[in-house]
Length: 319
Image (cartoon, rainbow, N blue to C red; front, side, top):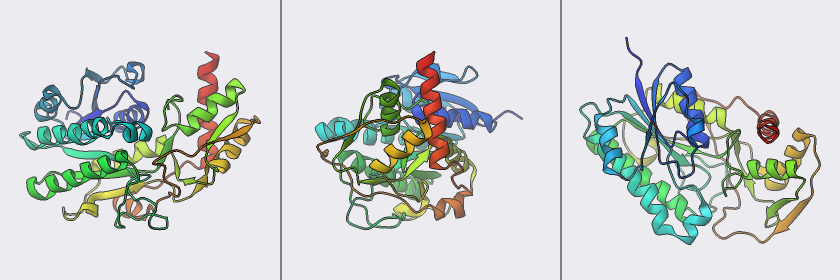
């Protein structure tokens, strides 16, 4: 029997390439769709099919419609909160309309694939309620990026109820690990690794007491495999098929800097810069729903994940 086919959008990027690797290791036949605006074709496995393209294009919708995929793991996105604040229209164009374009392709397929969406648990909930955030709590995003991700989830929920699509939204906490872009807003661990290796100070925005839930990329990749295979609850309200993916442990930016320096065995200087607009102050998620319904729990603690990440950056720099 031939392997089930899966499409990974954004599969040449940081998280997407790890998801593609995990799906291939789980026995899927993987196709990667990526426009390479931020991804790197070197991240695509030699045994995976690669299609260069934009998720907003007719070709991308046709690929979903005609590709005979069992699953679509949709990770392609504009991920920079600062860019979303500066240009919310461009952010919504990619993160809302791009997702909607793929959902239409899935709806029109002769056998619609399961649609696993990479959303955000770090940005959809907002600061009005105390964390840990549960899937069902009120959502008040602090940035256009969070708003766009939430809007895409509402479209997915609609497609599940009205068109019968099997959909799952994975609300990631702050993902870190090998292959993360050290030059992007979303990669504080990667940025700190590069600065430590270069002997440069670690820049902390604001007072550094803002908390995040840092989850290792390998655990996130496994969550996608679990969501591709698990029996999903019946379609219903927005949060029925949404799952937080994190650790449930809050870590401040100052604590992160100290932990990374310890894991790296290197001491760096911490300097402070002005706080950034649209930045959430407190964020960590409750993960028991993913444990109960997807049989997923994180396996890599922060110290081990930071060591693995720093070692990867150090090896890359040496080569």
